[in-house]
Image 1: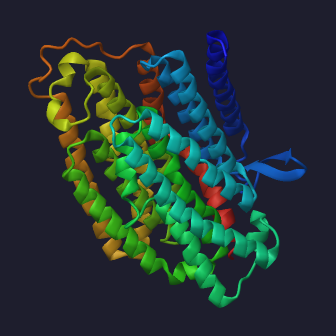
Image 2: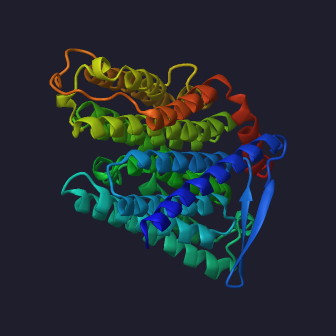
Image 3: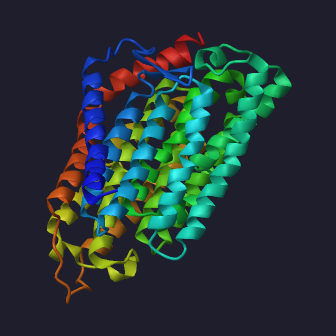
Length: 465
């Protein structure tokens, strides 16, 4: 393959996701906020096997976030110090992950969900293995692979059981199927473990910090912004609508696991010296707060959980892009070596400040809306322990986020003998786009909430009633 063909393929990947991103913006404009069910259905026929890809209020913003972050990752790779062939390999893996993620979020078939859900492991395993920063990248890639493969085993068992029970994988049939009581318990546990590994919850969290530390910048962006949402999305699509009574029965167990995960992640974040690990443990705390909202069985908290997933995907991606830019300049992720970045890179410090504010859920940022709705729903249900843990988490998050920003940005610089360039045009564009969505979701949440609220009521409250 000639260099010209490789260059054309690299451009083709970007053009494809530019088209998808434009298309999903158009879909956002024409979506009916009063219709909670599927609004756009596409029929796909592969080897005479017909499946349906659909868009509704529940999955649309996950799809939108996927197209946005994949496009930004492809743009970010333009500045990487790789040769043309290496860039092609990276872009091909990112493109593959993006396509599989779109199938996961859009499919209406449990079998296609499982296949895409598991196939994502392969390109991401390769991506960490060939692009990691240190020699531990092989260890991190295998840790990621085997932990998620462990969860995949339980998901496969559930798939086989469902097929033997009803002979179909359609979501709508699954939602209207009743299972025998003893089998219900086993099936619920099997699905919960499969999704808990992806979130991740305690004690399945070990793979995430290692994968973040060893993954390249774009790998961390995809991991925090998209892959962590697969577990919570699986709970939304399967556990909550299929096992209505069992979700109530096991809610105390799930909330206890989430509380332990939040407390442990918040405490562990303060002790880290690697910048990526700080954001990784922070992501664990935020995602488990989403699980608390999902299992509050309150429409306000449920909408807030989905909103927080989207908001966290944007904020965490911005933070990892900032860390990646710093690593490209100084070749280290250890916090000890950073001071006084504002003297070298004032533009980067400006964007970093807003992402830190988003991470601590300051009002007018995207995370604030999600956390506010979750807290309101939990207060309405009078879950006192959950309220206390969320307040502690917010306090810890403020402490380590502002400490991280102060340590990196201010004080006297340690790299006083190095002259570095501030943001180039591509980096400035990427960080500006992410900042736009952090503020847009914070100032104008109704553009999202009006669509989410209708779908949540339709799937989880109107049908139950």
